[in-house]
Amino acid sequence: MRCYPVMDWITVQDEFQVFSTIHGCASHEPSWRAALDLLGTTLRCRPYLLEFQGSGHHTGRFCPPREAAALTDTLSAISTEGGKTAFTFLLKDAPLHYPYWKPAVPMEMGSGGPNGPDDGSSLAMAPGILTPVMRTGQATVLLACLFDPETGPPPDRGRLVPTFQRLSKTIAQTLEISCALIETAEAARVLSVLAGGDERAALVVHPDLSVAAMTPAFGSAIADGSLILSDGLKIKSAQKAIERAMLDVSTDLSNILHALRKAETGSDLKTEQRFVYARCKRDILHSITVDGIIEPPRHGAHDHGAYLLIQIQHPKRDLETAGRLLHEVYGLSAREADLACRLTTARTLQDVIEALGISRNTAKTHLRRIFEKTNTKSQLELANLVHALAQLG
Image (cartoon, one colour):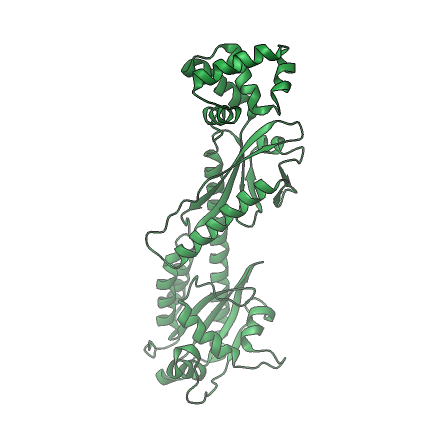
């Protein structure tokens, strides 16, 4: 454990320097380590800044897991007046910036949790002051300053508490600014993902299928509720094939993020794109693509951004493109190209015959010539070609 020299209580200039350094962490989260080192030197303490999920799991955001585990074990061994552990009290019940004083608690030899008896015992014997500095719907951030009894007595509580509360509020303000920057960066990432949507009806969702953003065209495309349903907060699929595609991509994203958190080298940052062909209530065939998007951390974020990009092709535009290419590349006549495209969205050849007002023999003659010119042998092969030309597959 690092030992800091005994010195008089901090000056106004010392305090200003510490607070100024902390404010600088708002836009550069890696600077927290240097800010905490400066805090420890100035206050002659061992500082901690720890973020916990609601379940009590340490996120590893500001402090290495090993150090966090040692302090968590120590606090979990201390009981408060309400019968809860000090750790639970700080995580769940203590008001923000409440100065909880941790006493020196001797530990039996052989204790000390996963970090060994020496580390656990030294933390238990170190008095200190702790407080929650921020709570969100997902996490709580705790600040702790512990004082090594071997370097001298801790500062007088009457002088320490006002400085500590100013410190905790400064850290809270910095974290609030950092969160705002992260949210702004999140919005920029979502817009970046949407910008890659090729002007199609596009929707961006988080891996839990909560909506991040959607284009107006997407809202129109799902208005009849036959493809994808949305309450504005989350989406769910209306068809099994779409549900399976979203689940597969979401699983891919989870595996990639897990590999990134373990710092595995050579991790593939791309997911396999899924294609789904589905009909809406108007019996029009749509192509739906589901992609996994991994974005690097930005503006202080401590994790990669992960999204599902769901796109619905506009059938009319796509079939017009396919018809033009069938005419220009494969030499189909306008009538033959029209018939080929109609077969892609119609249920049967008879539906096309009725829509075009032609005889069955004429339709078969056109179809035979289409097969010859496109080197296809069945309506299925022809449909696959039209899909490819229309960028549906």
